[in-house]
Length: 502
Image 1: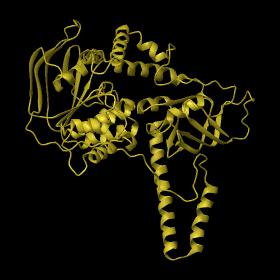
Image 2: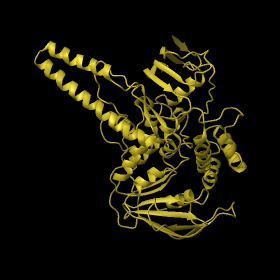
Image 3: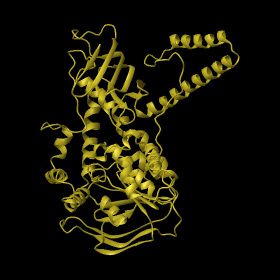
C-alpha cells in the first residue's frame, strides 16, 4: 500500500509485516516492518528497508544529517509506518511546538533572563532587513556571557543520562553525541545507503561492528568483481552464471537477518566529508598574546576576568574549559579582538584569524536572496580559475554542502548547512589561528570526525571551546603542543596535565 500526506509530501510504500504482528493483539509490544520505502517530494530516503524495534530496548538512531533519521521518527509517531494500536508513541522533537514544553525546555526556562533575551532576539530578527543590527549583536554578546547554549547542553545531559537510562519501555533517540549514545543506548540503528542496519551494543560497539561489516562487504565485492571480469574477458558465459549462483547461495546462507544481500555485491559507499584548512604562512612566535588583561561588562557587576596572561604560537592546541558562565566565550572574544580589554595589552602580529562562534549561524543576515556562492564570492572575490563560481562550489562540496544547496538562499538552509558555509569561508580566509566556540553544535558525526582530522593536520594555532569531550581529546592529544586553560572565578590558569587528567 502507499500512504501520502498532502501537507508534508511524505510517501511510504509498505511491503509486508512480520508474521504474528496484529494491531488487535494487546500482547504485541514490538514494531516490525519488512521491505518498506520512504520518499519526500520524490527524493528516496529509505528503499526496501527492514526494521525491528523490540520492547524495552534503547536504540540510538545514527547516520548523516538530512538522510531521514528525524523523518523515520515522525513516521512512527504519525503511524504512517503501522504501529500496533496498543503501543503509545511520544515524539519529542528538536524544537518545542506551541505552549507544551518538553522537560528540557522547562529546566532552561527557569532562567528568566535567558528566556527574555531569546525573545528579544527573535523579535529583532523578524524586523525589516537592515534595522536593529547593533542591538542584535549586543543581545548575542549577552547570550554568550550567559553561556546560553551550554545551559541547554548541561540540562540535556542531566535529564537524558539520568532519566533515560532508567526508562523501562522502548526508546529511539537521534543524537550526534558519542558519549551520550554510549551511556543511553544498548542497540544502534544505522541509516546507511537507504537501508537500516542493526548493531548490538552502544556506539563504541557500533563503530567496531561497522568497520568489520564494511571490510567484509568490500572483500565480497572485490572477489565477485575480479571473478566476473575474468569470466567476461574469457567470454565464458557459464563461468559468469556460476559466479552469480555463488552470490545467491551466500544470500540463502546469510545469518544476518537485517542485511539484504543484493543480486550483485556492491562496494560499500561511505558518506564522505572532507574539512581542510590551508597551510598558513609561517610567522614568528608568539602569534597572539594577552598580557595582564582584565575585562568586565558595564552592565554586570558580578562578572570580571582579571590578570589574564596567555599566548598562542604556530601549532599550539588550546582547550578552554570551566563552568558555564565563567567567561570562556568572553576570553575567545578578547583573543579575536571582538572585545577590547579594560586593562592590559593584546599583542598580535599581522595574522588572519578564523573565527567560529556558536551564534554565527543565527546571525546569517545577508539579505533575502543571497546564496552560499554569492556570499562567499562577496567575502572572497580573489578566486582562481576560469570560473570563480565553480571554484567556490568545489570548496562548498568538500565541506559537505550538497550541490543543490549551493544556489539556495542561506535563509532557507538548516543550521548544519549554514555551519558548512561558515567553515568554507574560514578555510578560504587562509587563517593562522582558529578560534572555535562550540563548532560541533550543528554537525553530524562524520563531519565532527572530518573537523577533528582537519584540525589535526592544520599547522597553525587552534583554540577550542567545546562540550564534545571526544573532539577535545583528539585536538589536544599531543601533550607537548597542548594546553588546558581553566576559566574560573575571574581568572585564567593553565592546568598542569592533559585533558583526560582534567
